[in-house]
Length: 190
Image (cartoon, rainbow, N blue to C red; front, side, top):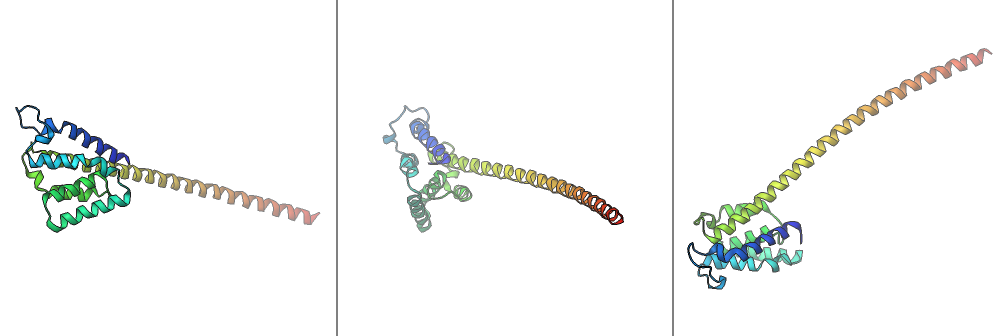
């Protein structure tokens, strides 16, 4: 399990544990999760409860799981299938594609629900995960570009020093050749 999967799993478990309180209507007593009537809350609870199984899948099993979710979404385009596919992408089950994850969420009806909707809150967390990962990827790319520019600068400096050293070596060789030529001429005279 990679770092991103562990981070998402921790967030999912935290949401699952806090879900009963978070998903409960305001002013109502703390309900039992199983007794929640909201379809959104049940869908979110089911997705979160499946997280430990999903992150434990092998790479091949993960690809199959993602393919099945992709097929289910493509067949009917149901909102539940879209959210499940987004969940798999967020968990990095079967391959990571944060751009697609954001596209799925941007087009999702769950993002147009009321702000206190459990499904909207869940999708907002998935969206935040994708944005944070993309930002981290851009930062890493920026750092890599900076290192590459620094390396290119050092390479240019090294090439310049090499040319300088080569020039001095050529100059010294010419002087040495001139001295040897003078010595040969002197030896011919004697």
